[in-house]
Figure 1 (cartoon, rainbow, N blue to C red):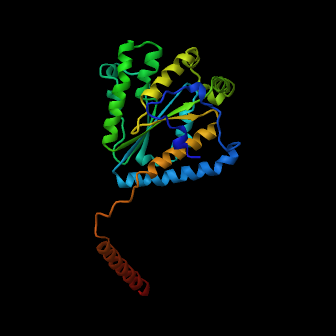
Figure 2 (figure 1 turned 45 degrees about the vertical axis):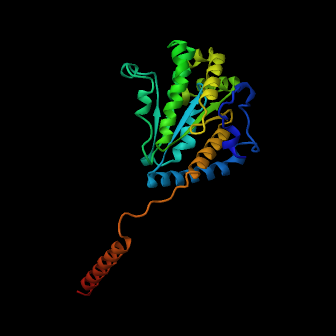
Figure 3 (figure 1 turned 135 degrees about the vertical axis):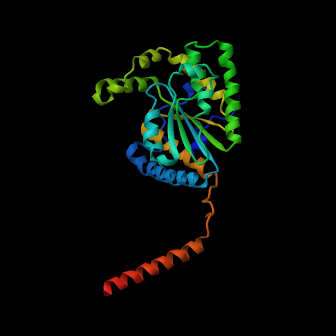
Length: 287
């Protein structure tokens, strides 16, 4: 299945998250049956990211949004962690600092966008300012309503300057979120992930659903599409995200740049030096 088409939010279309099955897993029955396909995409992703870095003409911005325990860190680790750190990085956005609050809400975001040849993954993003800020009434309604247009304009600017943008909403069910919270409580290795805020935010489940539906509906554009990824099954999430990233990079039709030096001349010099070294070694052995 072409997940790029299957999960992309059509621009202008109203999203209803309760109509999208978060446990969808396509033709695969389990992780084992999907592993070969996942490995193929992650291997291809390494090749394409190297090509993106070498060509230095485009950049890729990947935005990950999800409810608590939705799998942002897991996606970064299992899919995007296969890329070379020399040309990729992850940026996480926490509560804004006093300095950041003294600027417009996109100021801190713009500083972290990828340069040419780079892949940057946002763990949370500018969308927090139409999600958490809306749900918790951190700003008046008039202000957060304007931000949808401002975000679209910002992403249009990035796209016009060579940045491809992919935005993934990792869609988990309410029962699956509770199961993952329970795992954190029962597994000492996951205790560090427990936050009181996670459980408080669960009380706002329906409000977050409404906020996400508006963000997905109003801010999915041809140049910066949203994808709603069924994420109850972590392995399927990894499969879908890796395929979409690979398809997007392949569409750039990238190629390695031409060498900036005279390879023939360098080759002649190399062979002359090699021959001279072999002669010197031969003379030393005869002595």
